[in-house]
Amino acid sequence: MDCIFCKIIRHEIPSTIVMENDTLIAFNDIKPAAPVHILIVPKQHIESIAHLEPNHRAILADTIFTAKEIAREKGLKGYKLVFNVGREGGQLVDHLHLHLLH
Ligand code: 5GP
Ligand code: ZN
View 1 (cartoon, rainbow, N blue to C red):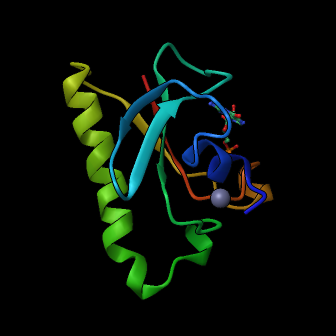
View 2 (cartoon, rainbow, N blue to C red):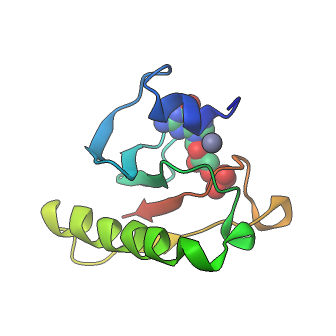
């Protein structure tokens, strides 16, 4: 898949990985918009929230749960979780990802 996040998932493009398991990867945003800016990315290539299907429910729940775990491990007391959806929603990379910002 010719997708920048798929390439990161395959370790073809380097990134600062925060967490990785069979279904998800989390890495630092290359252009941080806040002191902590981590992207939590399902390994399955789903384009966006708008492309979710019923069988993706568990992946989406895992994505949000992982954000919460990373925030807890980093001792963040408050943070923002953002999904940009579609170009008009500010989404530039068409591979579903959750921004964790603090
Ligand atoms: P979007 O605008 O699609 O919601 O967010 C995409 C994010 O991916 C942006 O914040 C951008 O800085 C980040 N990004 C784009 N390309 C790369 C990359 O090659 N490596 C990393 N670590 N982040 C990237
Ligand atoms: Zn992808």
